[in-house]
Amino acid sequence: MGEEQHSRKRSRQHFEAEETRHISLLKSPRCETAKWYFSKEEIERFSPSRKDGIDLAKESFLRSSYCTFLQRLGMKLHVSQVIIGCAMVMCHRFYMRQSHAKNNWQTIATSSLFLACKAEDEPCQLSSVVVASYEIIYEWDPSASIRIHQTEYYHEFKEFILAGERLLLDTSAFQLLDVELPYKPLAAALNSVNAWPDLATASWNFVHDWLRTTLCLQYKPHVIATATVHLASTFQNGKVGSRRDWWLDFGVTTKLLKEVIQEMCMLIEADRRRTMPPPPPPRREVAWAIPAPLKPPVHMSRGYPFHSYPLQSYRQPGIW
Image 1 (cartoon, helix red, strand yellow):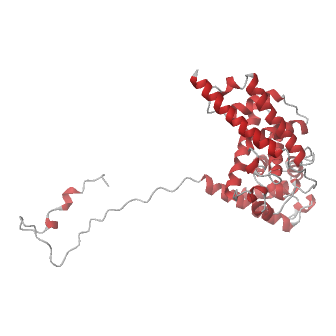
Image 2 (image 1 turned 180 degrees about the horizontal axis):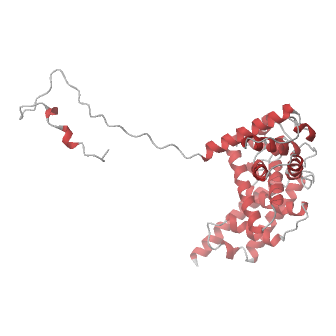
Image 3 (image 1 turned 30 degrees about the horizontal axis):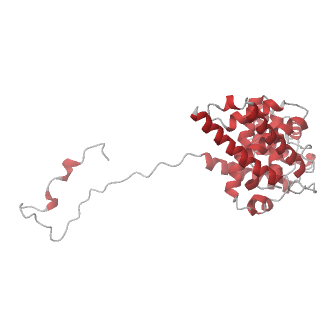
């Protein structure tokens, strides 16, 4: 009984804190501009989170966190990868207008997935979204799956999700409902160049990964799709297209293609370094060399110097 009261109290404190944050958020001004593409400098140096003291590394970690959360939530709800990708882009765009310091990413991500289901005409029941999201957020608590079915907790969390949905629409001036993803341009590019199965698989996997990054904030979907096919074919040492500059048929210049591929390679290298296991600690080498003093000290009760006894007998194999 005491543990249940403590859990209810802790959850109540969480809801009160979240409610305070949402109340301040709903007073934010609406976004009146349709600009959803930014330069790399704008993303890294002038995002709203940077103004609130959140550095680039922290924001990158939060971006990765809500993308991973959306992937888990989408799989739990059995929605398509298009819905999950759409929700990721919504979150990326939202946090270019609002700060991480004032907006809980778990609430915004849940609202984004619910809104993405509506935008892509793949409706999902709000009750299912609320329960699934709550269970993932509080997966450390064994009683969470039972608590969310209680009327009090369910309605409070549902109101947070609906408030987040209103905030998403208000921040974007209802333009988040029209999200273009690289999936359709990628399918067109693969069909045009007669891609082989391995190339198609690699390209689709790359696009899934790019949606977790800020590439969708820097470049349009057809640019990302074209550069992805070219990059995947390069990794597989294959040739695509009927002519050398086939990407021009998709409205992508050679200069732009090189720029996007360079960004992609930097992301791949950064991810490789992040996931690479740390190197083993350096092996400690024990020096057994004994200096030979000019005048070795003599033990007062022995007739030989301190270091004249056989040290080799103490070097047992396997100890060092």
